[in-house]
Length: 270
DNA sequence: CTACGAACCTGCCTGC
DNA sequence: TGCAGGCAGGTTCGTA
Image 1 (spheres, rainbow, N blue to C red):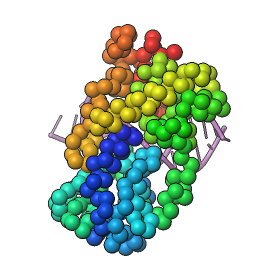
Image 2: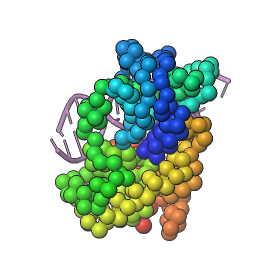
Image 3: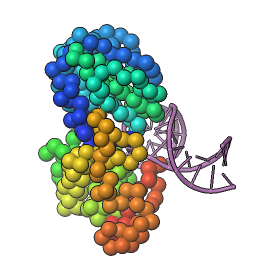
């Protein structure tokens, strides 16, 4: 479900409700996620104070006095902040309960998400291989150009490879390529430095704008407060195959690239 | 090393 | 109304 803007929106929604508070319970009704929630983790966490809630890639990191919780939303995961005990519904896998009664509930119908406890998150195998954050300065045109030189596959696949840069999922890869006028199937190593610089700016721009608008709600995504995201109205290509290009009115084309729907303007994107 | 397809799941929508 | 089939915002894994 979520890409970086949706995860960041979730982080901003939850952080003020849990930072500085102490865990009084971690309830697990259904441990089956991408990786099962292990019973001993709840014991490690209860009694600990939350020092901060940060994000790395699409992972939320709950920093505790000792260790961290790594949370991923997968395709259908969702955190909700509730004022107190509420009857759980289907797929409400787990609750975090804090010393002031605040309850943070995790729901994930498709179970591609995860809730993991670790003593050193930066050394966790799911984290160590990750590339740079797209919104940080280290991700620039020169870096992208140097990385793309080694690759012969399509640019869209490269953008969605977390070893190159994290947080760029299917929606925003499509949108950033449209904004830059680059064809999604173009061979990565055949993109100039100047275009890499513009592509980096487009990625940063589309992600920042989506964060400001609370993410993109297509079907089931809602923020931690229950509000939908409003970036959907800004989508130029994603979900618009067959409809006219917003720039030149040519009907947008659609192809499948390693299983992911890819939409582009055959006239504006080369 | 890169590149690609399959796999992991459930819910929802479409078409017969 | 029912049911089969296809599709979905992610990531890992196995295989060329």
